[in-house]
Image (cartoon, rainbow, N blue to C red; front, side, top):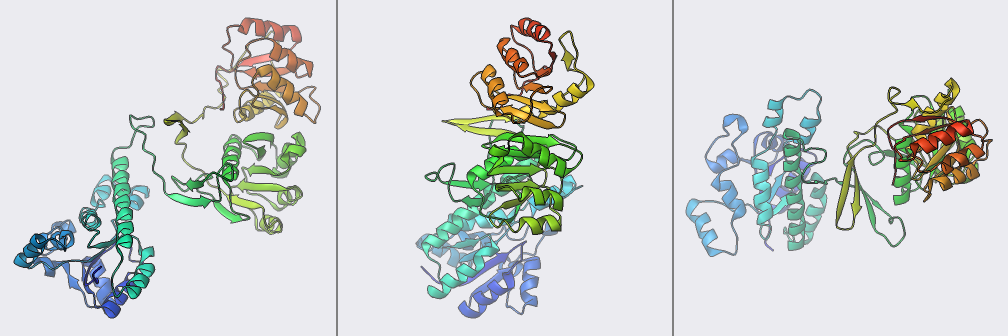
Length: 507
């Protein structure tokens, strides 16, 4: 280790820089070299600083595009201190070694996210000298430390105080690793902005910063983290109170949030293990909560809840009567927060919308990627296939049931009335069993309900099971080789049935 004698500072994010530079100069007698606005900030802070142009003998030019790319800078960074030829070259050309590089980059990502940004603005916010200095210093980490994050300043000063003005090799290596990751992410952001990748392109590029360490994964022996690709959705939600979120909480919350986005009116959904145990859309949020809970109050115990409206005091008061793990909503009234805050362990999440993106699942040896199952029911494609067409009330109930069954694990059958689930048969190996278990789970009367099936009925027996519980109408994709047998069975049983031409498997 050798003490840091000379530092180059050129940053966009100037957080804490003056204090850091003051400690370098006052405590360790480090010579400060800087550029433009960074040099001006340091001078205004009363610190001695040399402009890069003074070191290179060349002024900034081309509107600031060229300032640090010069042998007196890159040579000072890249020279290997243990290599005599490198040291001779420095001496011959009067180049002083640079031991510390403090650089962060033009804010390209923030510029790209700004509404109305022009293409020329994007081009001018592509940093050239910054990545060059960062990569040079990271490559030569054996002799040079590179700092790209202001959050590192305090711990580096603490180490320098303990190491007589030096930084250990382990620290320099860690800084270099983070620096290479930063420039890689920066280049990727530029490439993805100027040439957006196809949703299902030739290469899958998964990059997302870690947002949260989780205590464990699905089970206590599995390690887990949350990585967030943006600010919206469950991954970008703001936790307002409660215990730390678990892996399983986040999976269930995402399933609940996706389901609740199906509804335009006030709606509530209660989930356990990614399957709804109750969902409702009503005139008020309180009514939606009450109707959702009616479907299966036993399974709702310890459940995950999502609302598509700000939670009001009355809804919070009723929800607080049940033990729940988490609630996700776009917001909460002050009175609702006050009531729910009495349940200290209850996790409250404030969630905003997120772009649709793609669905990614890992399998052994690779990944499966698909577009999001977004299509809603198209009335023009829905057709009645039975002798009796569904009535107005049945149509409303069928549309509601179809929105819910999309979010139930296959094979799935949902019994419902207008705006309320009545019985949910989820994840069965046969469709007739899904119909049977949906009825078995129903605590409310099934007579007069409708049923939704996420895929076609391969045989009439599923319909026969539904009719046995006195449902009156069915919605399903159709497309089975035995569709005519199934339609004939529906007519024989007095069921109205419609085909959507759209399947909603959920594995």
